[in-house]
Length: 196
Image (cartoon, rainbow, N blue to C red; front, side, top):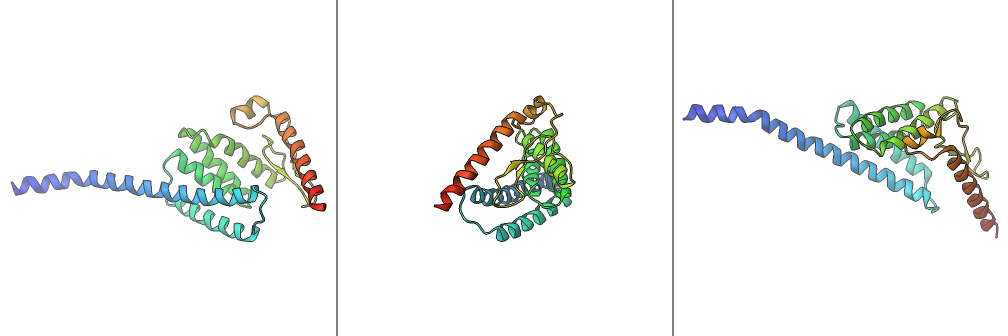
């Protein structure tokens, strides 16, 4: 009887490892979700028009990027959502390599069924291309060379068909240009209101 109990306990060890591995993977997913939520909270402050401390946000971005890179290096990303969250953090990096890695992570996320990663795959590729001095392909990036100039659609390859943009959950080039017009209008209205 004792032999039987020992064998049974040993036979269960792989299942215990599997269950604990699943719990650990879930912990990493929760960690990534929390990092992602913090990142998005900073973005909402920036988009709200409230005053924000760009230097503090940049420092938090660097800390998040470091944490995500560690999880990637240790092979802790498992789900499509994990890859998507990691990509979102890295696409806020400053180096073109950050944006390219974010794009690669999105490809994996899409392969794992994460639909939200399509737009981010396009945006991170656009950021990479702009970072290396080329035109963006999808038209997701807007920018201004000076704080007193309105944001403009950055140079975009108009040879990319809109059907591809639509498949990537990105506005058509016409819609991007309309968004640019709206941004310029809002910028000028805000600037005029601030002068009063």
